[in-house]
Image: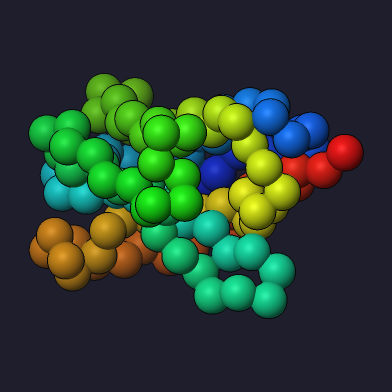
Length: 118
């Protein structure tokens, strides 16, 4: 399964973006999927995760502003991002949640750039 991210762009502080991750195959058997980001000069971090049965988790920095969802029928994972601020500027990637939920990481895609700026 390969993952392709899209939906990034330039947005002003306070704005919204909706990121999409399309899988080349079925995601039904993947226990956990997540959105990660890498900001300039920082390590990649997990910002949101969702299990196969829909349970979600968020980093403290995005809790209450971001919403992750998955559509097992369409093989997509979406990240709705609201109330964006400059600290959200990063390249965003999707992938599995890895061994913590018994999955293997998939190959990392190119990600989608999100820039929050005036």
